[in-house]
Amino acid sequence: MNSTLHGLSIRAVASALPDRQLTLDDFAALFGEREATRIAKSTGISSVRVADESTSVDLACAAAQSLFANADIDPHGIDAVVLVTQTPDALMPASSALLAARLGLRRDISAFDLNFGCSGYVYGLFQASLLVASGSCRRVLLCTSDVISKLLQPQDHHVRMVFGDAASATLVEAGPHSFSFAFSTDGAGAAHLRTPLHYHTAERAQGGASAEVGSLFMDGAQVMNFALEQVPTALHGFLRDLQLQADGIPYFLLHQANAFMLHYLGRKLGIEPARIPVHVDGIGNTGPSSIPLLLSASPDGQRLRQDNLIACGFGVGLSVGLAHLSLRDTQLIAPVTLASFHP
Image (cartoon, rainbow, N blue to C red):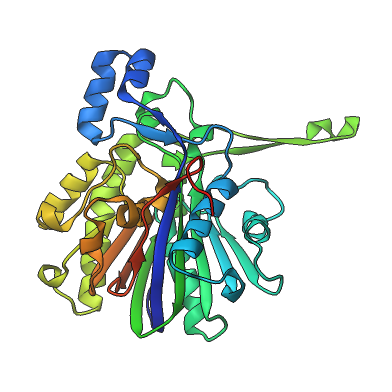
């Protein structure tokens, strides 16, 4: 699917991080110094952020309040909320509704939860852009937030040293730009990256039932193969459909899985490292928050405020999401932590 939407602008991007970090010393104590050093060297991730008692809505609320405060945005001017999360605060009600209430938004807004991971920012940006381009909304708040650490097995070092918790907030509003999107979604690859949900119905005879969320499972080799095979194909096809040349794109904003994968993808795509920014150390793979965190948290983020950019998320689904967009007029706001932020 390929779609171009008109009359759009990304006003601002903000983010929020938990206070606590798991460092290389913490990982060495868990997995041994040699193994921890090996993984950190290959992934480029020597520490990650962990949310402890905070929830996805807590983090999303901090990111959104930072966006409102720093970009001078009136919360009552928001017409819709899109929250991308794999770790909702509850199975019901929707976490986007909880977030809207926490932020004090109007009651006559629409609110959506999107359950997508590493491609989720592009999916969410598409949903927000559709609402604005259709004329249904003038301003849409797009948030991403996961406390994925709560789904990780403590002894599974392949995920424990890679995934981190974070949130972001993006304001999409009416403006002068056109954004294009393309997606590829293959649920047949679900077994390679998943978190199962188990319903226990046998207890109903005793007057009740329960549900249990399992741990995150990732077949790293299969996910790597998917990324290295499908992302270049999807990206080249997207550029071809838009009649764009890769050499003319100043930056490719790829999902920040880990440094090794990004460098490998760059070589396979034939794109020099300077045009594929990497910012994972101290943060980790934050799923749907990784691209907005690249924008707001990277020391070189301001140089990304340009036209003619490509964003690409890929992962759980298995899925790929692509966007051609402009950040020329976008305010990029440095991350806040839950402890330091006071709106």
